[in-house]
Length: 353
Image (tube, rainbow, N blue to C red; front, side, top):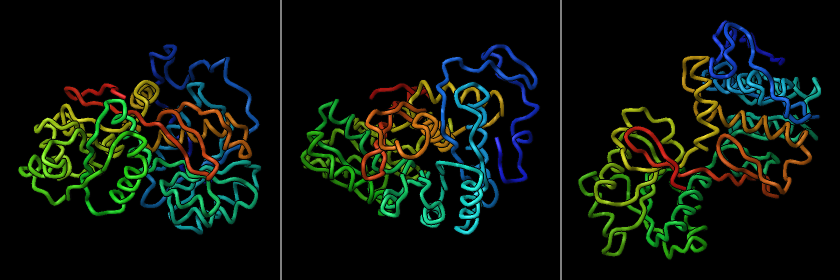
């Protein structure tokens, strides 16, 4: 793998013990590669913030892709380039990638870098890792995990559970606004007459009363909590105590174990628990750190690039299965992703939808 930064693959992955469960290899030996790995004509370039304020996140994403390659899950054909944190740095990385023959650009991660990269890429498709669907209007394919995808998972759960009353804990920010829009758009299809809101300023001890009022005098079936801060966690705990099914967003995936213990019996939207946990465990064993959902996002994006052989077939009709669940690009360049709904049980998680 080629990259443009002084942070090398050897620095990030070299000298670490291989996962004993994967073939019993030690030292720098690599596990055997999959004999069923499909041939790929793709030469994707992964544009990540390997330097700057988001360097830690970008490096985790690069390491997850590299580890998946070493485990035989991806071809070793992906260019990893430093997109920095400015549009100019991202454009430089995009130009370097196209000069090296990349036929698909994955990234950048940051919203304000994406339009400039699309313009610089010319005819080479750009699959941004941002979570802003509005970037599709600028010509990017939006692969990031959007608030709509979490809200859609809540609606699928509501439909399967025959829930009729859903309440949103509204923090008044862009995340809540986009979640509310998605819930409103999908409510009728899920059999929900109306989505109501309670403000995030509601004190935890008043949550039960606020929920009953929002439910028209009855407790609602579901409270959706997009935020993951301490106040939102306290309010979610109170809602669980009041007997309401409480579901957090994908942001809850990054909470600490202590937080999970406090949020016992609450739910949240999250990655595919089997595929994600398999690579996450290998990542922890190899690197002694948490992989995280955003790193898994990079792995899924690179896998898709190799599966379709480049950019022209991104809107293929057949869904793909990834670490973050099943996904498929729509004709408008936004992504439909089926996140799981997971319940916290004694600090562990179990899939419920």
